[in-house]
Image (cartoon, rainbow, N blue to C red; front, side, top):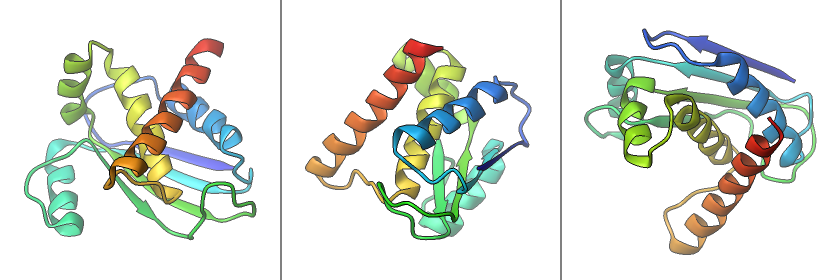
Length: 146
């Protein structure tokens, strides 16, 4: 497995913990260890550009996912999952609202992005319940062991 993290923003975070969490999440959702994933931490301007270009929505957002190979939850086999782009500056507000640290919020967003890459979504109520339940389980299990 190759998990590449690039920090292109001015905020610092625990990058090693994010990578370790993704390694844990790969195992937790039974992804092939040969899958590749790229995570980019970007500033507000870059996230705004990506949000406009790919979602046709103005302004920044907290996380975007860009799937490459179509790898669904529970599928085995090597491949390139895709890219998760996170905006730590935007995520700060979410952390404050949730009463959590920036690192905890970034961890949540990374898992959220990974689940999107695996085809999960939250457009419908039932999909949202399933996705958020799995997201919560992964984070609880990760935090209980670390």
